[in-house]
Amino acid sequence: MTPYFAARKISPKFFGVEMTLEMEAATRYRSHAEELRVIAESNGHFQTQRILLSIANDYDRMAETFEQIEQTNQSLRRPKRWG
Image (tube, rainbow, N blue to C red):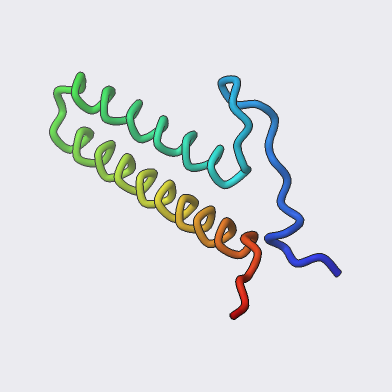
């Protein structure tokens, strides 16, 4: 049986660059966070701004999680050096 991390596929090209599914998700979440920040800046209602910025921070945390997963997967893919 193939371990989960070894079975991960590279996603289709994302902006012309091949990415793992984890990095594609992290990029997408960062983009959503930025979009929400732009919307929050243009919104005059304080409570709405606060909610949008909170959601943007949540997207950033999700992106960080996927980036950490990718780093772990990369370290597990490297051949182990003995001796």
